[in-house]
Image 1 (tube, rainbow, N blue to C red):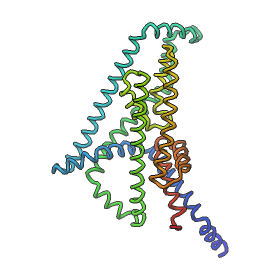
Image 2: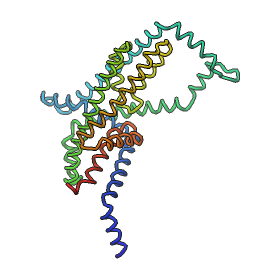
Image 3: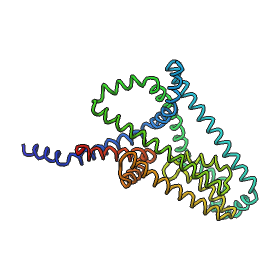
Length: 328
């Protein structure tokens, strides 16, 4: 009896701490499961969010629900394909112009640095390239690409069924999950939508800043590259740098050091503004302290990469409800 009473006393005294640890474990398991074993989930959410307004529009036109769902998914995929083709073509044209405009400089650079490549054992550079292509990372890349394509198609199919059968799914969830938990989930769903909205606003702000900066520094295709940076800004830390680094290196090669330095400053400025605004917006909308927001985002990204941008603050919100829930 004493042992049982002692356990109950420990449970009562440290209830909130235990609940916080359990919540962390549950969120960690769910997020890692989605990240490593259910990659289509991300595509499913993206496709559903984009296709949902189209689906509602088709339903208002009295189109059959299954046809409306199929058309919505089809139109979204067509838009993505057109965008990728346009984007790829524009990047190819831009690189071609840069190469043709500086062909002599690039060739001199290759001749200068090719001598520093020590292939050893009498191997040719071509042989070294072939040996590199035989490395495991090429196979891994091919497997990852294949998995990504499969995940994309499965995500499309899942999004279709969610669009068409959402009422049945809602009814099933209501039958399985207690009402009080559903109420809390619905309340937190509003916070989730606010977080997504804040991320969209931050991406638009970063895109505008980068476009203006590229125009000031006379970067070719400033608007296109700015939009690409805006899309990549969703990826934490490494997103926009994918575009910035080649442009900075190019300007260093052509000895335009002022532009290269200016682009470095622009990149740092965009990142600082984004972090400050993200902490400010989330703390205001979700009633969280800015320090808690920054820590939750940082820890979330370290643990879950891209998913951590949302998962980190969501844990902060749920943790706040656990800590202060009984005091309200």
